[in-house]
Amino acid sequence: MKENKIPYKTYLDESEIPTKWYNVRADMKNKPAPLLNPATLKPMTAEELSPVFCDELIAQELNNTDAYIDIPEEIQDFYKMYRPSPLIRAYFLEKALDTPAKIYYKFEGNNTSGSHKLNSAIAQAYYAKKQGLKGVTTETGAGQWGTALSMACSYFGLDCKVYMVKVSYEQKPFRREVMRTYGASVTPSPSMTTEIGRKILEAHPGTTGSLGCAISEAVEVATHTEGYRYVLGSVLNQVLLHQSIIGLECKTAFDKLGVKPDIIIGCAGGGSNLGGLISPFMGEKLRGEADYRFIAVEPASCPSFTRGKYAYDFCDTGMVCPLAKMYTLGSGFIPSANHAGGLRYHGMSSILSQLYDDGLMEATSVEQTAVFEAAEKFARVEGILPAPESSHAIRVAIDEALKCKETGEEKTILFGLTGTGYFDMVAYEKFNDGVMTDYIPTDEDLAKGFAGLPEVNL
Image (cartoon, one colour):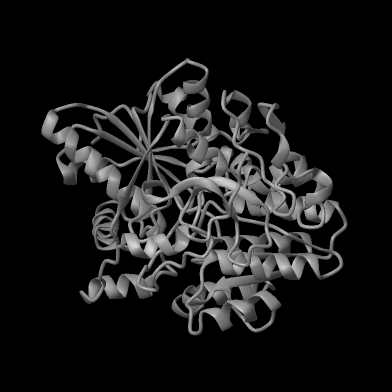
């Protein structure tokens, strides 16, 4: 190993942490479709969005032209607590696979929240504080976003109300307790505390919930509580903007090493980490400066890209949020409780949906037993217990490396390790005990979700 010129870990200097976020929309020929007002079916204006989101975040959400947006100094200072994050050469995984491929991963789990979500949580909390708000509401699935936002709100002295998907609330009690330790209130969703929650429970008794349900409840509370706004951990343009710091650091590190990735892989639920990882590389592709192969990996139990429809849909189950054009399974789709990881959202980022529809990236779906097999292999050789979400990307990175073994090609593979799995031990326990099973929705299951898509003729 000592003969290798490329180090195991590549860290940037503190001075090399990006001071601007990159907005990939500026380089997209086909811009992502605008959010629509569900009442008028016309593009949402800043004024219409203001009861829900913070003003500065609305400006970022609607900005399709500025390629770079300054990161405020207060956010830069916070980033320095855990950034830059390392770009790691997976030498031990390469050896275990006996592959000529060169595998790298960007590790975003080296902060107290344990995931990449803190990159956007601190930005959104900062803008809420700057606007003079009392607090924010949000949803969380597996709990990484809720954990990160509770930390960020504690840092800025904001109240934080979290609606956590019920199945995750029950399966991940320690993630819930971390949020409470940082001062957040955590409610299992759907709940009896909101009008929308009560309606969902009446229509679906005993439901284990979904991100769409939790979003509806969080938005209701935000819009009915003075001094509060709603914040979201994925999907929205503003979130992918904040997460671009991941890809920007990656790009700088690769440039310092003199290395260019051939394949870039990320797990995909709503699109925040994947969008953040690929943004600067996609920008080069859009500008014709370089070419890369991008692969989005989603769970077979919630296959928005691979089996969804590209259409306008509600962002939430309660149908109170704006309509977004995205690859979707329908806002009424609720993933099986058997699904042990995150990545539970029924739709996908409008930015990534447009890029996918334009043929600029690929997508594949994987079953959860195969995902946990990859997670176990990675943990045993690389020494990091990966989050189930990240393990979707690990699964496909391994598959691509094994293809290189068959063909003899020395491709360079990059994937995003978005966080650690130390609060996901119930899922690991099921896998280790041999009781984890795979669930793939039937066409009939998906048809029920598609039946609820709104009619939008533009």
